[in-house]
Length: 408
Image (cartoon, rainbow, N blue to C red):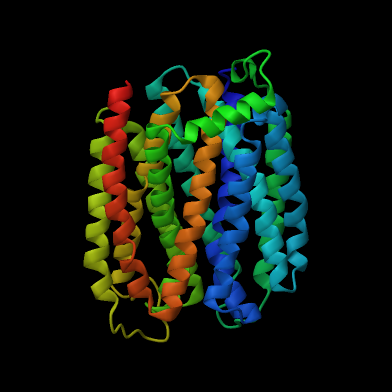
């Protein structure tokens, strides 16, 4: 049960879905160029991805232990493998809505199963927190590589080119590899269920969890964090293209750099959280993120760039904004690990479902708000809005820490 095989499989599953999920920023940019879709219309792709995640997670999370986490992950990988191989033939905006809809459903199964499985293959709270951070770090490495991969397939000289759709052949192959690797691994799931308990009792237990003060404050914190995170991750390519006036491929590369900063932050958190209490780490990170927004955004005003802009002559602000990823990164895995390790293992599936639900709702809300403000005002105003949920997140995490300390 503690084998390297299942851990490797979890890493690869997360790797595949990281690329598929976070391709939404690149796709939003490209559908605007290929199909003349407006920013506000393109922003609904986040909803096609996140709302199925929220709904499916809520409905099936408490049932997954009886289905089996491994079976649930295999179903998810099979679905995305099929749809991803169809995408190179996409010739209308609805194809992308369908793709993200399927990715959303599948990721709900993957994320709940992965989060619940971590409790089955780790032996202590510290090991749990460390594995969670490195897993999320791997997720961000995949986001980085995915953005770079998309940038290599984009034709800056021809906005209407659909050559970039060929990237889905590669993503389909990765999904198929992940499926067969998981199929060949073993996972002992005996601790995930209570013998003789019905599915309806498990579902009611999940519903009862929501009204617990500790859980209620936690899900508010998750919602706020993902709202902030997705605002930046989804709209960074468009921000760089429209506000910093760099080529589309550079905008996608900026998204990759931001993801790389997230990866660095999460791998580093795997070590830091072993030494320093989580509340000090995340509070410091939120304050630094707010400072970066306040310092960087004024530098993006009235930028004039040459026609042949590259990373060697880009505006100074282009190098500073991705640094925020280092400090946003530790927050999510840290608070998820705290809540999961405070619960018995048979409740990890239900709690993981709640995490996924409110993460999805936060992601959709953040993307739509940012996209709407971006279109009605400008990119600077849209990113300044992130200071509001940052302040609320700082407050909610202080309350969460106090409630958790009382419970302990």
